[in-house]
Length: 164
Image 1: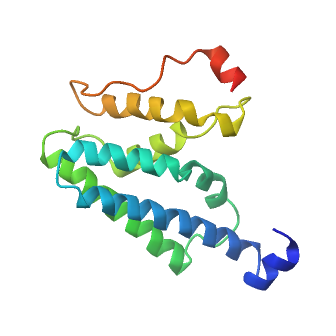
Image 2: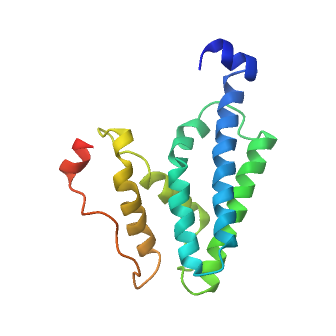
Image 3: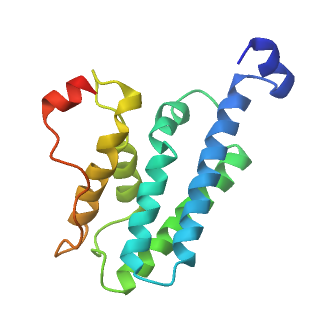
């Protein structure tokens, strides 16, 4: 985006970054609402949410949120609270069904989804997608026992990551 376009639509760079963060959080909230609307297996709904959150590239929010813009802006606070509440509700449903470990919190889930969808240093970002959902599923399987899913794809070697 050119400077002229930026300043025609946003008063400053911080406003643009805040808008991007809020948009990603809104789409993440919608994914949580879709998970809550599912009437089947509660853990499967949680799993679908985690994969959808990774597809939203929530890992890209980390450097944006650590920038200098106002973290207490009402729009950002409202978006953050909405996501946290919805994700807690999705997790509570799976916990109540006896499918989710009782010692896992929203923070655990979101940090893992962000970290596992983030490219490792020295890899090409755009070709990492083929590994993300496999590693998210490994994490999700660790949230309950016994594991009830088959991992997508094949085992990932360090050479695969270097070539990605």
